[in-house]
Image (cartoon, rainbow, N blue to C red):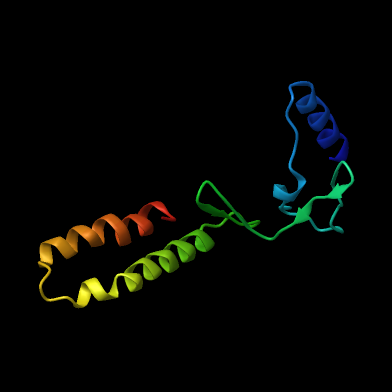
Length: 113
């Protein structure tokens, strides 16, 4: 694995690009032995249990329960942050419904704001 990372890093440099080790993470799936240590240059790549990629939570077991929980939590946060709007009596219910669909429901269906 380290040799593949070294080769990729070397090829990137040929095109004027490079890895940013501080932004790189490593997640292992179905790995039973000790955690390998990968390095980019002299810096070790951080090992994580889950990460967010393009707004979706990726977990090592491949299940979507973590993603569903994260979306529900995000929708709950969006709903609570609009608490003052929900309590206002001078705002029509149809307007509140449109705000709900555009902010709360979209977080639930599509992920982070």
